[in-house]
Amino acid sequence: MWLRKYLQIGEDRPTWAYIVDVIMAINVTRDAGKIRRDAQLNTYLQSWGPATKGKTRLPKYLQTMMATGKKYNVSFAAIKLDRRLKEELPVWYHLGATKQLRRLNNTKVSDCLRQKHGVHVIANLLKVTETHIPIINGQMGSEAQIENECECDKCEDLRNKGCKHPETCRQAAARILGLIRPKWHPENENNDGLSLTHRRKEKNQQAVENEEATTFDPSVTSRDGIAQAFRAFVNPTTHDKPPAIRRGRARNVPEEETTAY
Image (cartoon, rainbow, N blue to C red; front, side, top):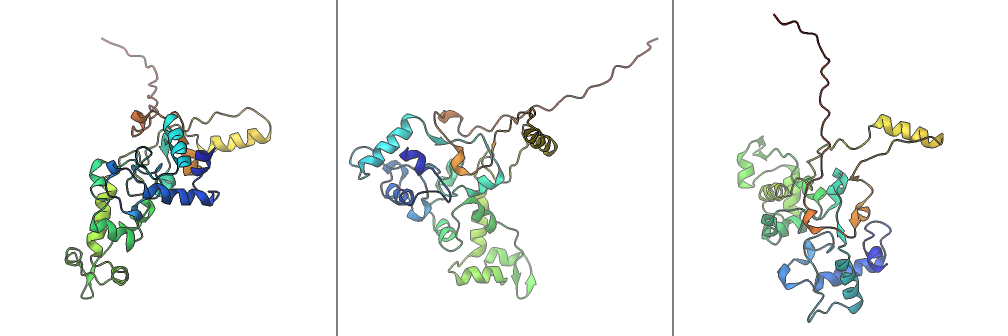
């Protein structure tokens, strides 16, 4: 019950769960290395974990909670996420990132992205990587990008916030986004062919109102919030595997009469 309430990510999340987040962050394992505190959000949504054995300072009740989660393989394990949910996931120590991203979690550029650009979740990262046309000496050009001398309002605002190299941060954000695996990448919206069409959904709604039979919706895409994507008894070997895609229907070629000589 404790673990279930702790994983209520959203407006209904209890206040004590946020305090637990801080306690977890303080007691991170040595294997995770030195992690910036502002890069930590939630151990179940990131690739770091708290120390639960040995000389850990984690309270006994939290050790029990984490042990229960480990025993039953509780994990964030959506088969397929829609773009909105992908954008809500933390950038740093991302669950679906390649190993290269781990080396970028605690650099000076990543510090600037968090502290000056407010990058904490994927949606923030996408905003930083938006198309940017540099301006120098009142004219548009590419040299300003390389030299970080762009005079546009956006870059000037970032400098006022303390970012000395807006274009360097913009390029770093693009590199980080490129290290997210396809299953988790916000711009990879591969249609699996499983979801019902809008027309069929409307017919289902009418059927419910008329107390008639409805068409089963085989969609595996999670759309109802992060809290709904946590599962127990998860096989860790399938965590990063992309979802199956429904094979397209073959074309039916009508039979034709052929006369051979």
